[in-house]
Image 1 (spheres, rainbow, N blue to C red):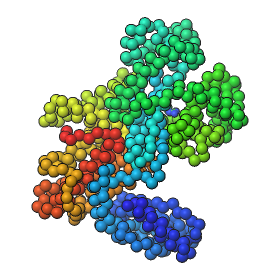
Image 2: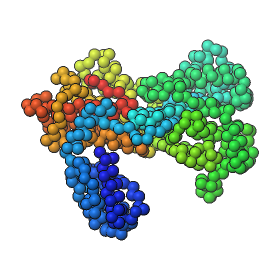
Image 3: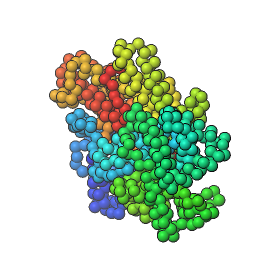
Image 4: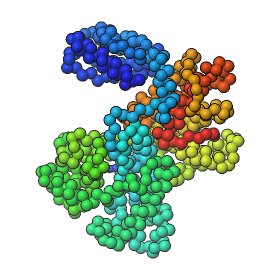
Length: 580
Ligand code: ARG
């Protein structure tokens, strides 16, 4: 609907250009908003305000001319001027009915693929393998996965990349510790990576010999020593299985095949540096190879370096990321590279993108975006910690979520069997954690609070999951198959209209999520859908309605509500329940 209206407006602009009212060279950026206040219509645009200056006209007069130039169409029921020159549009009832019917029949509740699909490479999760995943790894995995799903349903080819850190200096320490243990102990100790890491770190701090050995082992590992590589592989393998367990529990799509570890770029790193040198971009600074980019300066106004090779010859995080850009463009054939990484790495990515273009590693038209996110905070306003004060392992956090959800269900005095309750608790627990993250603007920090995320009130997973079961229970009760209801939509009641108007916006919202990589738009929308359904359900009987045409239409509204909620939650990586 939005696209159609955009086209109609573009035609009106073109007509005014032909008539000479508007200069031929203006190319307006059409902006259509959904006004909050329904009395302002279904869409509003500031087009006349933006074009008033180039047209040399007063905005209200231009708005009038634009309205007069609207081509004939069956979309707009009414166009009116508001305030200094906004144009408000009311969509015709007939259009609304058509769109509803379309969404009802549509396998994805009306989500339309993009006109020009791209290959989008998405770097997400990407933990360092030296430690076990902790709460800080939650956001990248959850938000990244939602965007993967959204871009997929819009028809893009999505390539997932898990750029795990498997090559840092910490591995020397870990190898030195492995060396000191016999095979059985290694297996045992590796079952808790966190403890293993701490034990190694203690040894490193307490014993200078151990520390020296650790440094030797890094060098040995990096120069391809067979024995070191074997131990290292053993460690990496255990660590990756831990990650996979977490992904599976979280319902994150990442698989082993998506892992493209830092170490896989090793062979390409000398080449990256050589090419930078050939292009005259390298400067030696205290023995290190650096590129100074004028675009990035410190407070004193000096250009900041990107270090690509240390004085000892070792390569860095940035070098690997440059190699990864090339790989993603040339081998994976990406048109758009996306990175879901903590916003504190913002400067790093801006430098990588700028340098990759400068060095010709990235085509001028390659799109690259770092989508950052804020920190998960505790209620005390500091980064979230476990009760013992350490970092919270993700696996423990998910256990706690499931446990708390189960307690909650039991306290509600549910009629379900133990097995059913356990399954429901798993879904509710995990989805509460995910939804709490997804429903906040990713740019802000958010407070991790069990009580609010598990609440059945407000914009939460339990509320939405419950709302979904309420809708589907209508069908279960009547033994009706929701996808095969014969009859038309008829909208008379104000609550029916309100629900219908929200339901037809689904496609628009999903596109907006994709454009900005902001899943919280979808959460807010689903919350509105559930709220509108609730008001409708209170005001309008469904199965009890005596008029058959009205009853059929209401059933269809309920069916489309269920489908929209289910699809929407699925795009967020959240499984729905049939009862709870
Ligand atoms: N492993 C890094 C970290 O934990 C994140 C990697 C993000 N991806 C990338 N291509 N740099 O900080």
